[in-house]
Length: 450
Image (cartoon, rainbow, N blue to C red):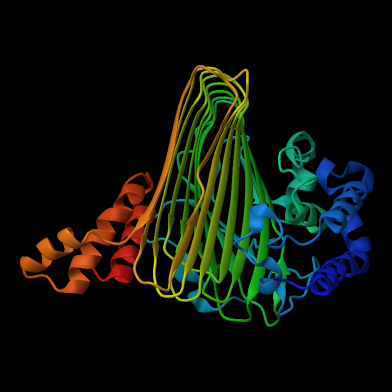
């Protein structure tokens, strides 16, 4: 358990860093202060910082963080600075993070900042914008005013408040009414630094009525010191829009990530998202979806494969506010070595949200006695005409299946690999972008030796 003085020191270090860079944050790029979008305004930054100071760094005393020790992850010390520009000189291996065969609009963010030198966006349909958030503050201020800071809850979530206070750049995507983006967007989050950095990118994805798009975000660590990324993503899915997002966390085993995503859905929209965690030191994913109109579809998928001393904590919330909606959630994990996993999924059905169909399931395989898993599926229902179910299972590989495969001439490792690959296949087969699915399939095969 973290000592109170250590927590106070952590919080003070963030407050001191904010004061040291208050002038830079107030300028927010080149735009005049009066033209700043809502969530980047200096007054709101100050309010968010004060709220962070009140809430403090989340610790295990907080029920929502009881299995994830953020103060311990921060104890080694990280520099907090929004001033560092993206580097134009990256190690050559950054191209290994690209997906062979993927024809996409490629966006590169280096240490949380948009890098035009490494982005390959190409031609876009009329009205579509893909750029850095700092650029969008000048080119698309009206869109930012309508959406940025409107969905992510900085008043009750301390790390979201901290991000709101510091955020300067990140990914901005805007797809206007009726536009179908044929090629997916591939956003690479690259980290390479000579000092330990605390990064706070802010992402805004806006899809208007009848828009269609697919987005892949991939965290990819390069050479350099460890980083701690506190990322916040806000997603607006307009009426009858169809949106798929994929978050692939592959930062390297010395890098920690807290990813907070808030999606807001309007009537008859479809939002599908998959979170794939391949490695990382401490990884916490907060995924919240608000279907705030009738006839929404929401699909949440997750696959986490921690090994070594990795910790992966997935926390999801689907907040059904309106009637006649469907949500489906499936998270699967395989834990090896001394890894630990957490799944806390909640389906909340409000009183007026009748005729909701909501399904939630978590399945985890633990490969040895040192790995640990904590699962807590939840339903909180205030409507009486609903069909909701949830479940969680944690166990080892079926010994009968292993025996059967070994009796057919397979080694123990081959038999385990085949069963684990089939287990993960339930998630992989739901990925519609073929080069991404092939890359993940190859990684899973290599990891399990199947």
